[in-house]
Structure formats: structure tokens, C-alpha cells
Length: 85
Image (cartoon, rainbow, N blue to C red; front, side):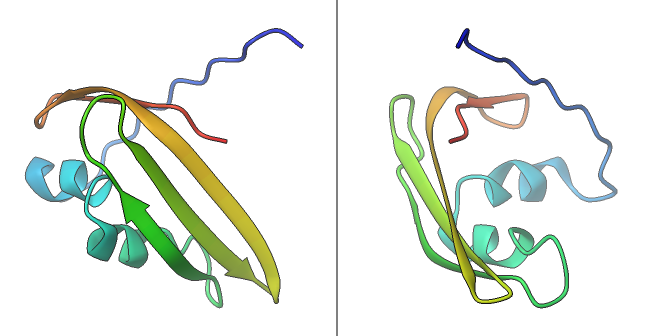
């Protein structure tokens, strides 16, 4: 399979510092990585530097969904690029 790329742009009514840090800080990730009622984010880790890894486990209806990735570019409050597996 060839490599896939996804670009997402969305405006969030919140301070840019909060939104940016929500992708880097495990405590904040635990709060926003709950996309629907009943979803629980657990086992969250983050190494917020280029080449650093992150991981989040979501529990959805008893099923475990593991997500992980690598930070590829970090420019505070302007750019955040990462992989998502």
C-alpha cells in the first residue's frame, strides 16, 4: 500500500496555546481524546519533541483502541505535524 496523507483544518474557539498543548500534554490529551460520550482515554504518554512518540488508548464500549504516533514537526503555536497509527 502506498503512504497516505491526511491534512485537517478546523477552527476551535479556544486560546491557541491551549489547543497546541492539548496535543502534547498527557493530562490535556486525556480530556480531549474522548470523541463521544462513554469513551475513556487511558494509558496516555507523550514525548513532545521532534522524533518523540505519543500513545493513547481509548476504551469504546469495552473495546480497546490503541493509537500511537511520532511528532515530526513542532513549532510552538503555529505548526504541529505527527503520524497517527
